[in-house]
Image 1 (cartoon, each protein chain N blue to C red):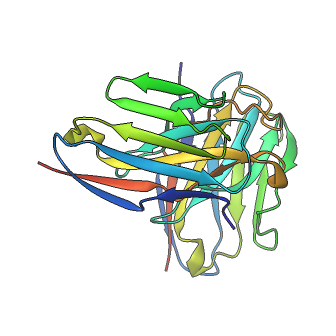
Image 2 (cartoon, rainbow over the protein chains, first blue to last red; image 1 turned 30 degrees about the vertical axis):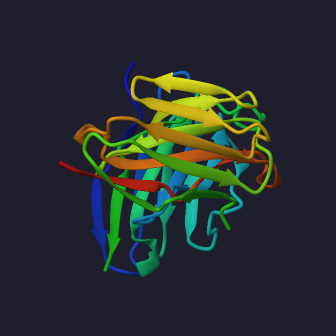
Length: 118
Length: 112
């Protein structure tokens, strides 16, 4: 099966600029996640979708970050305006089963977008 | 803050030696997952443990879930250079709505 597709692979922007990332999950995976991974740390969940609805966005800095999954398939994550501390790898992942249950389906990650804010 | 902790943060291993990395949670977990991230790569799912005291093996890797389901370990025997990478454990934290929460990872470096 095709994996999780993400683009772009790399992005360099200046602070206060805006940026958008795109993700296409594995076909048939209802749950889609955006994680932020700062260098040397574990992935941190930003937002989780179940089909086209938001399940959890409690750790999303909503004053500057937004995400959507309008048709329940692909998703975009936007940052506007970017800050220096947003420099990180943004990972999209998808899973087969409803991740709000106590049994968690394994996550399939994309290659990520490495964002550098100067 | 993160409620899943991993030790050690770094592990320098001589090729051919064994080592163990540990994952601890502040709360009981219904299940725990392990992922491996190669340098420059993305996390790749390795295994999931569900039962108390469960032990699973994948070739030279042995995964264990604690009896109280609050800790887990990964033991690698006869380390090879292909084992280089960061190993993450992740578990659903009830206080966070069963969100899969990742530990900080153990970065493994292998000396040939």
